[in-house]
Amino acid sequence: MTTDLTIELAPSSSPRSAEERGRLLRDPGFGQVFTDHMVTARYLPDRGWHDARLGAYEPLTLDPATSALHYGQSIFEGLKAYHQPDGGVALFRPEQNAERFQRSARRLAMAEVPTGLFLDAVRELVRADRDWVPTQPGESLYLRPLEFATDPFLGVRPSRGYLFLLFASPAATYFTGGVRPVSVWLSTEYTRAAPGGTGEAKCAGNYAASLVAQAQAAEQGCDQVVWLDAIEHRYVEEMGGMNLYFVYADGRMVTPSLTGTLLPGVTRDSILTLGRDMGLDVSEGRISTEDWEAGAADGSLTEVFACGTAAVVTPVGEVKHTHGSFTVADGQPGAVTMKVREALLGIQQGTAPDQHGWVQRVA
Ligand SMILES: *Cc1c(COP(=O)(O)O)cnc(C)c1O
Image 1: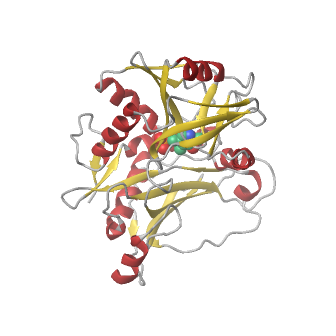
Image 2: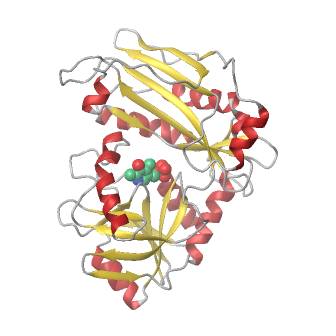
Image 3: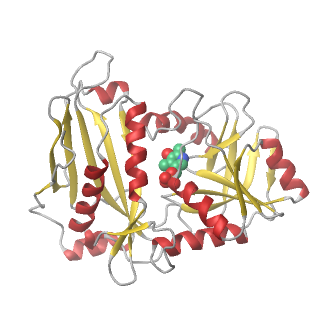
């Protein structure tokens, strides 16, 4: 079908002025300022993907019966475009996002966006809105691809029609206040994902189900929730929307294995490689909350950090649970955490060599 679909370019007739853009870019925050354009494409079984178009960023008009609103066939991605020292713009491993988007679509019984269409959409949008790519260190243009079911039908079955959308949002750092350790709440009451569920897919519903636990973490005075396995509530899976790494005094660095209930992060995967480049003994394994607390108490566990596209690498400080709290080392950002963070940012921002071919120039 239409894998070689070309994107029609219909630039906005009313882009914001350079002055207005400059004002918005001064303090973009995260996810609240949107650029002038978006890409849309539609899917129907008999037509495949069609009507791919880059046009003005604008509201959608939806039938109230649109099935995604009722039954949640809705998936998304998150990746960034980074300003480069020579004035260009680069993406970080975008094909990984394209492939994960397809895996998410399969899990939710949705039409898969061809990798070529996904990557073309990203390139065209970044080119059209390249003046929106912020240039300060740590800043980036966050790209949000999403796809949802469009059939106006209340019967429960996979939709036939789908809409693919891509838009962009200039981003300062995700967590305000710079690199500050986050405090976490170990949730034993709620779970993010269960075996056989949708934990591996980047679907909207996973986030909807997580919000009450995040609110509970906040009530406990914590920044973020840590998800444990659904069966024993013992094994560490993720932190909010980020993966976790545990750093030990003996040079080991361990991240929870992809058991099917974790979201396989591109950042997590990249750090498996970067950690090895740094000479660390990196592995995937099972970490219980008892191991976490015992390792903190006897000093064998020296650092814990979370990682994801939005917040890059973020140290984890205080840990709270129903029976008390503890802190790993002195609760300050650790040396390995900061080294991994700098290594990753260096590659993404073009200030360190790209030894693994992860960076793609788009403008
Ligand atoms: C997106 C996401 C991550 C991080 O994935 P990256 O590809 O590194 O951005 C981790 N956990 C969850 C639940 C996510 O949704």
